[in-house]
Length: 131
Image 1 (cartoon, rainbow, N blue to C red):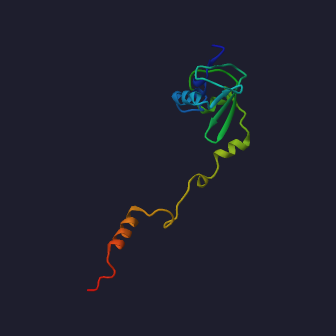
Image 2: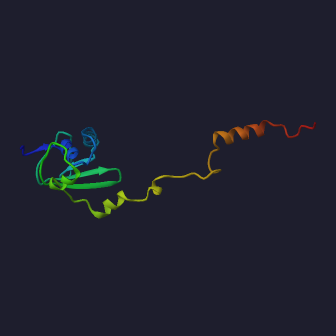
């Protein structure tokens, strides 16, 4: 087997990304660092190198234990990579979802389309009409 492998292939193979193209996009977006240096998709990684991955608000860290080019099952990943991610970063993955979404109470902010039509209807009605 080779003594190095492309970073995009490796990240796909150890299941950090679902597709190799996602791994390539992450490399092109400067979300992957090898030894603290941003890595291009063609960067060759070797055994013992540390990989820093930025996925959203989480920063993952892996150490290359063994090389592979083909995707393996999730149960085999620990044979190829050591997860060095601190527990504080892993806890961010399980943060409550409610904190990420903002909910608007009814009546707050701009009116809905239906409410706007009702307002227009009221404005156009002549209340001073004496019939």
